Image (cartoon, rainbow, N blue to C red; front, side, top):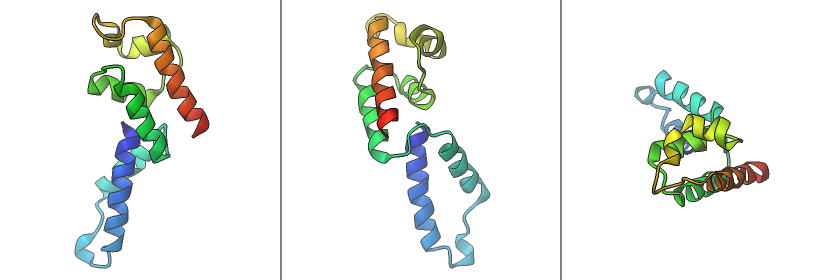
Length: 115
């Protein structure tokens, strides 16, 4: 998820800042732009909230890309948003009940609300 990448890159940025006195250790523009992007599009800023989101989504046996899409976009409705964006969450043998998807979305919204 963007939030996870933001935490990782932010930590790396702090490390690079500490050793940036040496001109050979310049921070690249690509790195800085990537950090700006994931920070801008991160739904969750608090590392504990990011961990909770991953834990909640992991309970639903989602593929990694499904987990990331739902965690990044935080859809509000089941049919119009969640299933439209990630239609594979309704496949047989996994989340196939709308009420399960509704609970997942509700859990995510609670984390965002109390962050």
